[in-house]
Length: 421
Ligand code: LLP
Image 1 (cartoon, rainbow, N blue to C red):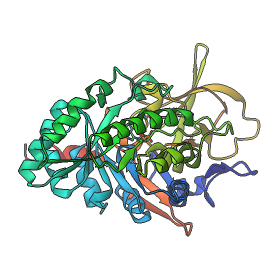
Image 2: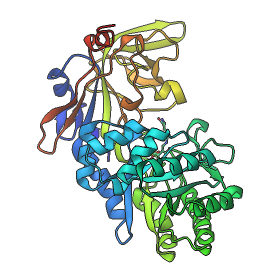
Image 3: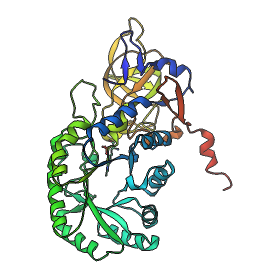
Image 4: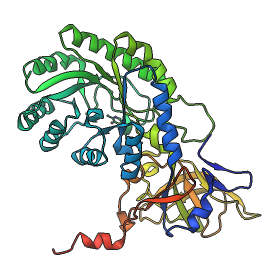
């Protein structure tokens, strides 16, 4: 089921290659290792699930902004969801069709909205001031902007509070009681704004599709109300948020098909074009962070495996207490004692852990250790704290070759920021 899997001989494979062999052939530092075929398979799962519907798959670039990955997804037919001016520039640079791009966010800047207007991407309206800025951008660009209203439907996504976005006290979107104000404001700007749809995004790591259905029912209702006032809205954007099997327990989680099937009839009943904005479920499981064991130590009642990777490369465990599965890439030495370890990095913070209380065989120094499901919100959230420079990225291609898809940052890169000052 997982594209990184242990063979009976105890070695971890990425597609048909031993991760151990890959480690021996690349730079000796933590690195991200992706499988390109799995990115394709994840995209195809969405594409196949959407058959029979008019739709746009907008990949949420924030999850992973590697240019090679973006170009690959674009070639497969993906659109893009952007939350900053630079994400918009990157999507354009990667060749995404602006008519399949959605510019989102609660603090979009005027200059970035001008670019969005010039390029003709969809823009989500998030607030009163955001609407005013979009109107101003349309005037500066001399172009009418296709807008969706981001409605905050107040549906509980049942996830970590940091990744819940669609509840009524959230900073995102507009509340339904203000809907009429926004409709009147759009009507007042017929030369600047064309209202084409409604958007919602509930949160991330959602593992129950009923939650999407509840939101879609509310959203279709809003669309009925909007249409009743003479707007020809065509798009329903139900956001992203589908979770993945981080725990590797074999539990059956909803698939893209389950997600789409739960809203299909509603979408068809109103003849809508469905936009979805997956990030994690397209990219998370296609990648591992590959690390080396620096040493093993014990303090008090705690055993630690210290690796060369850290919260700088991968912050989700430190930031959200997120669980990401951890494994050694090869068979443990015979007689290796199995213990309960915290897997930690070298960063000067007690928050610097990749996993807590993991049952693992005591590894040898230099052994490879991977953190799974590292394709989404890992490299894109990496920092250079403690001058741990951002790691290189590689992928395994369809023909089984390994290619570098991003250089690792170096000490020299850091020094360069001071050139000429
Ligand atoms: N659309 C909007 C408007 C979003 O805000 C997001 C994610 C997505 C789509 C994509 O959601 P996904 O399919 O990836 O769940 N850093 C956190 C996740 C933050 C998600 C923010 N918004 C993490 O590491 O879990």
